[in-house]
Image (cartoon, rainbow, N blue to C red; front, side, top):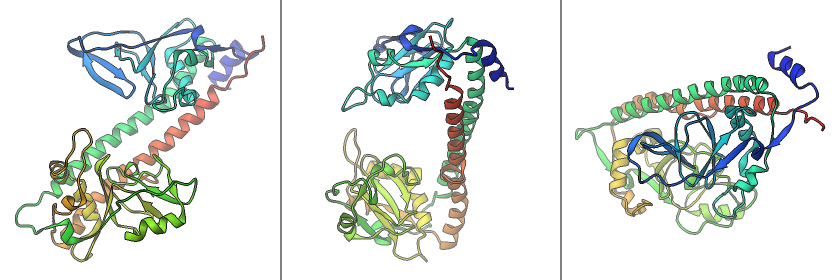
Length: 381
């Protein structure tokens, strides 16, 4: 029998009471911070830390719950903080509930299901206060927190490792792709076959051909999970009349966001507007993998942004993008560079083998045990 099982047997053999949030905590609003000076107190909004000031709103452990925006993204804070009006903080009665325990319980609730708005996702105090969570004795809460925190700490370590590896990749990428005047330089329009997927995107369907939009293209890979849209087979034939995508083709976004790059790894996809596809005309002159890494490098990205237009939303016309030049070193040198950078790329982005796969596995493991540990039989009054 585990320690947790023993505690449950001793302290709540007949079940656990479920309490509404308002019974053991108070949800409080945030406010503006702009009249304060700079400091080391973090200011939280619905997207995370915004800035640092010299004044705190609360200095006890608290769970921060977004009021608008990313309402499924909770924060546990145990140092002094300030919060703006897009995120609530909680004043928790610690004689009844451990703040870290409340955090794990609310993660399990998937607060996005309580959205009260049709546009920007929103939560209200009225709705939140009625949410019920199990409240076993504090000793049991402490043991559950200890177990679940072991999973989150490992995930945090892996995430920090991934961040370090990405920085390492960026360093070596920029160093290896730093070419001078001795290297041949040619425009993208000269060296590649190009397809600019302009025009109106056809009506979406519930199933069919996966539509890769600018939102799916990240810094080096296609994210098939962030946005799932489909078009019919008939629409696919119309949209792809300019050019069928092939595995290895290099994609770059022209707006919202600008300059994200990926390489096609599945030819059973459709491509939406604001995406340009490049395919080297001669594989003996330019490798697709080399092109992908170079379009991601800092030097090219800087030139891309200097050539863009727009204020908050930056964009570039295809005709201008095609005129940007890239280096064409000997194919042997391209191969050497690609072999080095691909190893970093696999570690950082591969969802089947690399660190992202390990992080995802740990996340699922945490969710499994969290849901299991927080599923108590409710005591009958």
